[in-house]
Image (cartoon, rainbow, N blue to C red; front, side, top):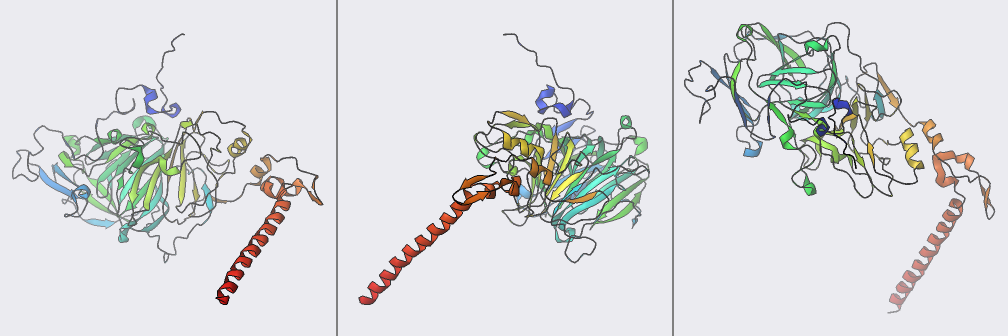
Length: 526
C-alpha cells in the first residue's frame, strides 16, 4: 500500500485540530512573540537579567533604580489556592500621574442590569443579530466597545456583561484598564496586537485572551492589516475569575489542557517611548474616566506572580463526545468557567463548538428541543455557523433566553430525520464557534437585532408518512390536516389508542376503588 505523506495545513480555519499544522512551536506561524506555558503557575520574567529580586518582594536597592509595585487581585487573607497577586519592578510607579478627569467616548457601555434600571430591558425570547458593522470613521478600541447584555452589577461583585467591539484604528498612546472585572476577549475579524504591563500578546481569530481587572493594556492593529479593522466579542465577569472546569470522570486530561495556556514574557518600551505622554482609560462601575501621565505604562522591567494575562488557541481543544448513543450536554465543550455564589451553578461558561467526530449509533445526533435554565449567546468566528436563520453569519450572534424553547428549525434537522443509518462523520469542519451562558439578559437596540420564532418552512420539509385516507374502525385520519407539525395526531392509531388508554385508566381506578372499599368495610366489621 502506498504511503501518503501528511502535508501540514497552512490555513488554520481549515484545520480539524491545531496538530494539523504540524508545528513544533506552541504558537501559529504568524505570532512573533514568546510566551510561558502553564495554567495556574506563579510565572516570572525579566527584561534585564538580575532585575528580579531573589527571595524577597520589596528590596531596598536593586541597583537599577526600579520601583516595586504590587497588584493584589484577591483579599490578603484568601486561601492559598485563591490568593492571587503580582509584583512588578518598573521605571516609574503608576501613582505618578496628573489625576482623573471625565472622558467623552463614542462607546456604549452599560453595566447595571438590575430590574430598576430603565435603560435595559429583559429579552425573554430567541433573537439574532446580523453582522455587526465596523465603523468607517476613525475609532479605536476604547471608542468601539458596546454592551449587548448582561446580568447583575459590578458594585455587587457578581455579574456578567457581554460586549461587541468594533474599531479600525490602533490605540497608540492610550491604554485601557478595567477596574470592574476580568475580560475574556474573542476576536472574530482582525488580529489584535495587545501590549500589557506583563508583556505582548498576539491574538488571532480562533484564539482567546483573558486580561484581569486592574491590568493596563493597549490594543493595536498590525500594520499589515490595513483598514480591515477589528471585530469580536468580550465577556466580562465581576466578583469571579475565569478558571478551568473540573474534569470529573474524564480524569487528568481533556478539554482545554493547562499546558496550552500561554503567558507573556516581560517587555519594556524603547527608551525614547518611556517618556511619551499617555492617556489611561479606566472603566469603573461601567463608567469611563481617564488619567493623563507623562510616561509609558509599559515600563515594567521584571515581574513575578499569578495575576498575568494569558491566551489560548481554541483549535487545541481536546474534544470529548458520546461514543455510543445520544447527544452529550453542551457543558462537555466548556473551555473556561467562572463561579457564582451558588456552588452548583456557574456565573458564566465559555464554550467552544468546533470540528470533531460524531459517531453515536441509533441516535438522533443533533440537539433535542430544549429549554435550558441558562441564557445562551452563540457567535460564529469563521465558517458557516450554527445560527437560527439564513442571516446568521460570522460577526453576528444569536441568543436564547433562559427557559426559552429552542432547537431544530434548520435543513440539517430535516436531513437528520431522513437518515436511515448513522455512519461516523466529521462535523463543524472549517468552523469555530463560541458560546457563553449568562444567567439573565438585557437588550439595547443596536440596529441589527431581530426576534425569532418557529420557522414554518422547516416544518414543511419534514417527512410525513402517507396516512391520508387510512381507515381504522369508523375513524378516518387525514394527514394533510396536520402535516409534519404533528405526526402523532396524524397517525391512524392515535385516536383509537388514546380512547383505549382512557378506558384502561378508568378500569384500573375502578378496580383499585373496589379493593380499597372492601378493606374499609372489612375494617368496620372488626
